[in-house]
Amino acid sequence: MRKKSKRTKGIEKAHPFDGLSRVNPNAAGVDIGAEENVVCVATNETTQLVRGFGNYTIDLHAIADWLTEHKIKTVAMESTGVYWIPLFEVLEQKGFDCLLISSRSLRRVPGRKSDVTDAQWIQTLHNYGLLESSFRPQADLIALRSLLRHRHSLVDHRSPHVLHMQKALLQMNIQLSQAVSDITGVTGQAILRAIIAGVREPKMLASLREPGCRHSEEEIAKALTGTWREEHLFVLKQALGLFDFYSQQILECDQEIERMYAQTRTDLEAEELQPLSKRKRNSHSKNMFHETEKIRGHLKRISGVDISLVDGMGVSLAQTVILECGTDMGKFPTDKHFCSWLGLAPKHEISGNKVLQNKTLKTKSRAGQAFRMAAQSVKQANCPFGVFYRRLKARLGPSQATVATAHAIARMVYRMLKYQIEYDPLSVNEYQKQYEEQQIKYMKKRAAKLGYELLPVAA
Image 1 (cartoon, rainbow, N blue to C red):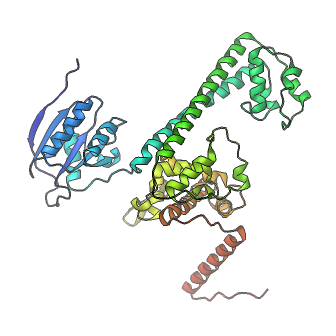
Image 2 (image 1 turned 90 degrees about the vertical axis):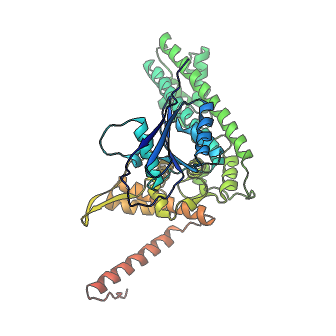
């Protein structure tokens, strides 16, 4: 049986923050570990009490009881892997105000590091109000977010098996990927399953072609003439079986997500959806949800607006944004705060009136990646965001233009969610007219600053 550590230690120490006021007098700090959680509370202004607990469920409730005994109201903990989630949920259910702190906010001065000193440091910083909690969406969306992330992982696990099928075919000189645009489509799947069933005649395989296929039966028959080696056929069979397995798991995940959407209660009533644009309706991504319109209806019922109508977004990206960011934009004071959290704004580092660094930091934000994907999809689109991207690309290059376009789309989504207004896009002509008026106003201002007056020239 594993030995649980339950040490309690009173430590006298001089605080390095003498002169600062205590913002959270009833604050605790927790250092999360894989096998032990170290909790620190302050008994008075000069003494901190540190105690170690195990990580079993009974230990987590013991932590809550111990914090209640010391009249703690708010608890800060570092986001260590996934170990923080059970304790965070238990304390949240017990009524504590929990703060999840990024490790970037807990940088210490060089010196000896231990679980006890980490817990003390977290408690001290939280006591003086020097910690800022990481963002988490509403509690009723967290379960849906977990399922959506799990679905993304299933899609990622399925993708390599498509490559395995293509590799096995090419090793037998079966050029199916040249004959059909997608081997996971209707024609490609029909031919693959016939090959696994034992059909080797090229013309018979080519006869499985769907009427809408671009290539003729004769061309497909030429591509399906190969060596048919047993070892590669075995690999093809297993890869197809794994592809089918993950496809079934994704379908079951979609059904569970649909069920949880139906259980999500909101004060908003379901409204009739506006039709999607022709470009979005003709999207045939293999990774889309099976009940796209139902998902779209649930998203509008939860958020109050249909952000899938925004140019570049679509239902899949809209779902990612809502479940990752939530619908309460009050947590972000302005759209600038929102874009900064997404990682779509440059970080300015200034010292001595000199700009040391001014670039967009790398981020793993799934919502930020969703907006970047939206920006990628409007590169050639005849919409204001597309014109905006192409104009910036000529001046800044494709990389910065993509981030800037994602920033513009994010600001639009922020305003829709915060002010509950539907998407009302400008036409390209209206956008160009507004841009020209803005440039004229800017040039007049510059001319006046230099002592000149800008006058229009008669056509």
